[in-house]
Length: 129
Image 1 (cartoon, rainbow, N blue to C red):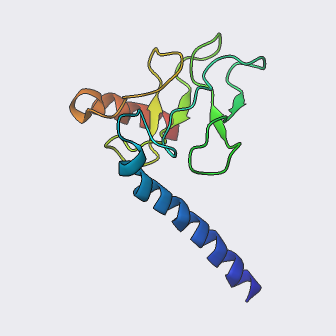
Image 2: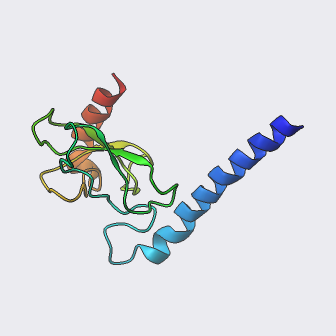
């Protein structure tokens, strides 16, 4: 019974996060790059450790504060590391997107399927290898 309780609690938490995702997207997101769950984090600069290390999430994304995101801007390491897509941009939620040349954001990689779709598919393929 205790085991079932644990699973139920985990499922409720996942559902709650989904409610945050669905419920706040239209309300909070107006006129912004994202919304609370989907704001883009700025951890793409070298922060004193090895390039490509995981850096601390400093903005709340609707999940647990202090989750980790991948450093994705080239700062002497490999170009084209990946950051999790935290805003739904027209593809599958949670797809991986490639950072463009902006230092502080990863913004519009999959907004336009016609323009970005092929590249996005290639990037996703690279991640899955």
